[in-house]
Every structure is written in structure tokens, then in C-alpha cells.
Image 1 (cartoon, rainbow, N blue to C red):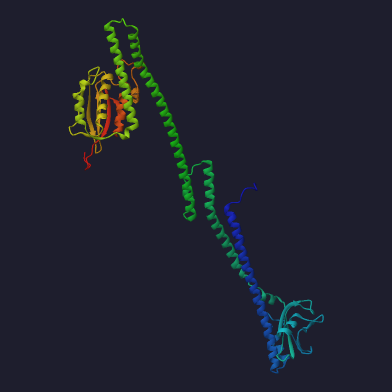
Image 2: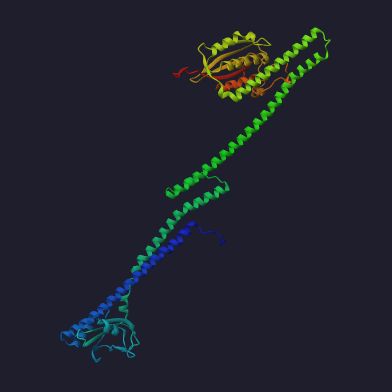
Length: 495
């Protein structure tokens, strides 16, 4: 047994409480017992004084004392005073009358205790051993003197079994105190057990919390009282704190992951930009170096080299412009001015100006949008978005046409579909089509043209306008971009 193991809280409450209650009950029982015993002794003493007073009254009324004393002896014969002894002395100590063995007034030349009290108060009683009898040594003694101090009446009551019973305190008193003590003990046990339950539950909760165990059902175990409410509040605060810590750690992990991803994307972007810029710059430098190193070059070759250099220079300028555009969209999207844009009119202008848009494969553009189609956005950004979608279809779809049509709307937005009749792309490429500089063709071939930033610009434009965009292969063939744009609402809240 481990002696260092602490006593349960219930027993630390129960034991002192029971000791205190039992002490109070024992004190009350002893006090009651003594009070009852003193009452019975006082009652006996009063009876002895009454007997002495009757003898003195008979003396004062000039009655014969001996017959009267015999009458008294016979009168008490069947009571607890059976066997009473009586002695009458004159003031000079002469014994006048006696029933039973004479009762002395002195013991070893000193007054008996009751006689000494009588000389002081006029009467006296005591419980002591007899100095003249050995077979029944204990007596209650009483003495009283007459008003004229002429006689003294002494009585002695032997401590017989009858008197013992008369003097005994009723044992029924214990039939009251013992059940009361048991009831109080049970009450103390139940009370401390009830109070200790909360402490035990809190201890269990603390142990589980320290061990990281499940705390799901702990709040339901506490009783519905003030202490239970406090306990549930402690558990609830702990859970809230734990959840807050877990949430903070989770957000921290997400932030770290996002930061790592941002660093990865930034690094990849820098590598991509470096890779994409090297080619046109290298080509331009090669053409210029060739021109500068061969002044005797014929005019046709010179013009062809200059044309090639200008083409790559245009491509480099387009790439830089696209990088600038996508950077502004990502960093300054919140500051883009939005207004009512007539999307039908915008698409009409794109269709009318399609010849001015340099398309390598001459893809045809169509649109199916109602006339009163007003969206909330920026005209120039939306115009550039549509142009980029058309250029992407022309460069990569290998189809003959592309189109935009309205496919649905609700109270807040329009949903559009931009699609082509080309070959589509492999499913493995779909998640990466909006990545910067992502190319489907092997070896990152640039023969198809483009900067690799058109679709990222499209996605960021839609996001800045508050919409969403996704891409999928279209059945039976072709590629489809489904995007949404917010409806323009008038002051009355109507589109």
C-alpha cells in the first residue's frame, strides 16, 4: 500500500465533519445524562428534606415523635425509601429518637459533611460511605434543624437496588442519540460524497487534459448545481482555449504552407520569366550581331533578318506588357474601377475589330448574348479578356471558330461559355492551363506563338470582376471556358 497516496477529497471532508458532529452529539448526550442524574439526585435530596421537615413540623406541633417516625418508616416501606434510617438529636447532642442504627453527627471528632452544611444553611445532604455499617456502606444522608435550634433530624437512605433504579437515568435516552448519530453520519457521508463528486470529476478532467485524452462527455457528468455549473464552465473554457490553440496552429500551418507555395510559385515564375525572356533576347541579339558583323550582306537577307528581329522584339514587348497587366491585376485588383458595361456592345466591337487582332490561323468569332446584358466591370479589362480567349483559341485549338454565349443567370450574376471547335486538351493539362507560361506542346515550343500569359490574365480579370472561371473539354470536341460576371444593379436594386 502506498502511504504517500493522498486521501480522497471526499474523505478529507467526511472525517473532520463526522468527528465534529459526533463530538457535538456526545457532548449533548453527556450533558443530558448529567442533567438527568442531577435532577434525580436533587429530587431525592428534596424528598429527604421533606421527610426531615415533616418530623420537625411534628415536633413544633407538640406531637409524639416516635409514633410519627414509625408511621413515616411504614409509609415509605414499599417505595424507594424502604429501609430509611432516622435519628433525632437535641442541641446538646443527646439522641432522642432513632429508627434503625443511630446516625452519628461526627466522624473522627469532625462534623459529617451534611451536618456541617446544616450548621451553615439550616439543612444539608451528602452521598458518602457509612462510618458504622460495612455491609451496605453507601448512603444518601440528610439533616435539618428546627426553627428554634432545639433539635436536629438526621436521615440516611441506604443505596439499595431499588434506589439505584430510582436514581438511574433512563436508558431510552441512548435510543435517541444513537439513531441521531447514525443519521448524521449518513447525511455527512452523502453530502461529502456529493461535494466530492465534482472534485473527483475535475481531477479526472485535469488528468485527461494533461494526457490529451478525449473530453467529449465530461461536461454532462457534472451535477446541475452551482459547483457543477462552475465545473462545466471550466471545462468549456479549457475546450475553447484548446480549440483556439488548435485553430491557431492549423492557421499557422496553412499560412506556412501558403507562404511556401507562394515562394515556390515566385521562384518558378522567376525561372519561367528568365527562360521566356532569354529566347527572344538571344534571337534578337543573334540577328543584330549578324547584321553588325556582315556589312556586305545582301539587301534581301538584311531585310529578312531585320523583320525576324522586329518580330521577336514585338513578342518581347507583348510579354512584358502581359506581365505588367497580370501584376497589376494581382496586386491592385481592389483598386480597379468598376462601372456598367454593355457586354453585348463590347462583344460587337470585338467582332467588328477581329481583323485588327493579329490572328495567325484566322479563327472565326461569334457571340450569342442578349442586347440588354449589362455587367459590373471594367470595359478595357473585359475587352482584353475576350481578346485573349480568342487569341488562345486561334493559337492552340486547331479549330475554325470560337464563340461566347449566355448559358444562365440568376439575381446576382450571368454565366457565359466561351468555346471552340478544336481538338481540346488532355485531361492532365486542364488543372495547369491558368499557370503562367504553361505550354502543352512538348519541349515548350514557341512555334505556335503567344506569351504564355493570356489565360492567367483571363483568370485574374474574372476574379477581379468578382466572378469565377473554370475550364473543361467540350463534347464532342473542343475546349470550353465557363465564367461568371456580376450583374449591374441600378439604384433601385434592379438589373
